Structures are given as C-alpha cells and as structure tokens.
Length: 339
Image (cartoon, rainbow, N blue to C red):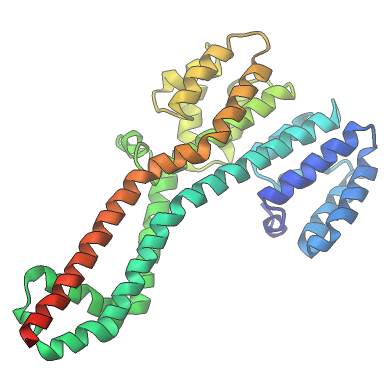
C-alpha cells in the first residue's frame, strides 16, 4: 500500500465506498459521484483529498483498478476485478462492507484487550513509584536482606523498574516484536494449539472473520469461489494467513468452501462459521442466506472476543492481587519492626 493509504484507512474507505454505492445506485455516473464524494471529504485532510482526486483522474486513463490496488488491501481491491462489467453500485457496496467489517473486528478486539493492557501498564507504573520512593525508604528502616523471599522479589523488581525505566520499554517492545513475528509467521505443529488461547486466538479470529466476509462479498459480485481466488487472497497475506488459506485451497476444487475449511483441520476461519458455511453453501442461493447468519455472528463478535480474553484477565487480576498482597505484607511487616 502507498503511504497516502494511511489516510485512506478502514473507516474512511468504508464511508467512501458506501457513499459511492449509494450515488451510483441512483444511476449517477461514477465520475460525477467521485466529484461529489471528493467535495464531501475535502475537509478531512489533504491525504484523503489527494487519494480521491487520483481515483477521479484514473477514470479517464482506464487506471481505476490499478489506483484502487495502490490504496487498499488485496481483500478489497479483488472486488474490483469485475469493474466495468457489471453494477458499480454492487462493487462499491461489497468493498465498503469488507472495509466496514475489518473496522468492526479491529474495534472489537481493541475493546477487549484494553483491560489487560491497562492492568499491565498500571502495574508497571506502580512498580516504578514503589521502587523510586517507597522501598528505598523502607530499606532505611530494615535491610532488605532481612525480609522474606517474596518481599525481596517484589522489592527487587520495583527497584529495577525505577532504576531502568527506559529499559523496561525496550524489553516490552522486544517482547511485542517477538510476539508479532511468531503471530504472523509461525505455522509449525503447535500453532493450532496456540490459536486456542489469547492473544493468538484473537488474531485467528480477526484474520478468519475478514477472510469469511471477503469470500462472501466476492461471491455476491459473481466471483467464483475457487483455487484462483484462494491463491489471490493469500498473495499479500501474512505467512500464517497464507498457510490457512492454502490449506483450504487444497480441497476447494472438490467440495464447498465450508467443507474445505473443515477438511483443512485448522479451525480456520472459525469452527462455528465453518460448520454453518458448509451447510449453507450446499443451497442454491447460499450467499444471501449465509449473509444474514454472518451479520448476526459479527454482532456477537465483541462478546466472543471478550470471552476469549476473560481467562487472560483473570490471570492478570490474580497476579495483581498477589502483588498488592505482598506490598501490603511488606508495609505491615516494616511497621511491626518499627514498633
């Protein structure tokens, strides 16, 4: 994606595509529709204004699909493979729905992980202030060597955080970098098990749900759900997503998409979606019927994500409670020494 694509984010793309769908759906010519959308969004910033101007200019040189590919992920730009050979409104509505779904999934996951991230940040801040003032003062009253082991462990951690605050950020950054590398690239024998626990389960859910809606919208605009589509979808994907999509591709020529996903045996995109999709895909007009179920599933996604994160929240709350208990014991212990 182009650097200007940063301004053309999920929410913005959803708004633009859906507005274009509404305008072209009334019979308005696409160039005129792009002019109106450009005027509507011109105050959103120079980045989005520049993207819309480039899209408008591309119509005269027959480069519209090429420009779309510059600013959107493969999952959306693939929808425009039929651009010029069907209803523009249907194409824009499908692309808008994909962008909208990606934004909703991202929002649900960010909402769910806010609490554990907040707890970790607060514990780090608390350790810093304890190590900066509290424990050094207590050590003047009673040497740390005389404290019980658990007190010494927490005190040592707090003193280290206070003495090396920037190193803590470096360590956290390195830990996150390692996690992202594993998340995006590890496809070994234990990955299926990792996908059952957060945060890996959240990534599988995010990629899987997006994949499902991309397939659904491609089917809605008449693109065949076959090996070629699977290979195209995997082209710009992470190594993890590519391995899951290509596992489905192995069976897609001999069975429907839901059955192929179950046959792959990786619980991707999602066990519940796979079972329902297998049943719906056998029906004649499966796209419209499955769409209703998929929309219902998406509305339940935030609750599903929060359930997946609940175990992590419980573990962090237990660690926090134990931490506070040790600090409290230290305070009362030192008070007893003073008395």
